[in-house]
Length: 271
Image (tube, rainbow, N blue to C red; front, side):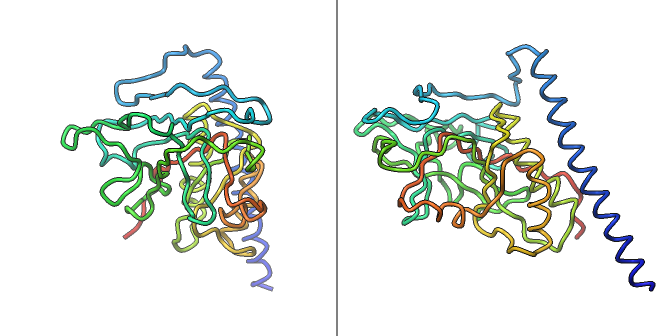
């Protein structure tokens, strides 16, 4: 009897926490929407500079066949030092995933003069998204170099839409943090970070797909249940990268917008 009461109490606590979390996310979205509506367009600060490159115009559904289109990117966060990769949030446009090589490919005009991505005071011009054994952004709140990510640059035009699948909605890349089950860390540092990354870059899409990069929890796992129950509050679905892309037979799958980075440590981690 005591055990039954404990289970009921535990279920009520979980239900209450989940409901409050979903309500909080909706409130955040509403408040930020109102803020963007009434605030000025110039929102850059000295500590956070938004870098945007010129984007090619894309039709609502398909890329124009035979067009020469390159990838583009925009970031917010620390862009002055390559070592501050964990402080960046970025959106990559017209980028593809190579299922055979298991890498994201950033397309640059063939034979074009290389343009630097960053300028570091010590290292000078940097021409790659991966340098010094780490990527360009962090995919987790408390990252090591292994939890960083960046696409590889290929000197090719973006494949045409009649050759590969081209996904229109925003996709957000993140990495699940494998620790003992802790609802607070999962909610605020895994799940909420993907939402805030979209909002921060003004890329919010209610039909977004949240993609876990390497170790998506198995069905039935406590982590899996939290993702399945909470992500629908602000996005269409959540899935593991390999499982999601295996639905497409093409060796390349292209994205109109891929958001990555922005995970922040919000809660104290006991030692």
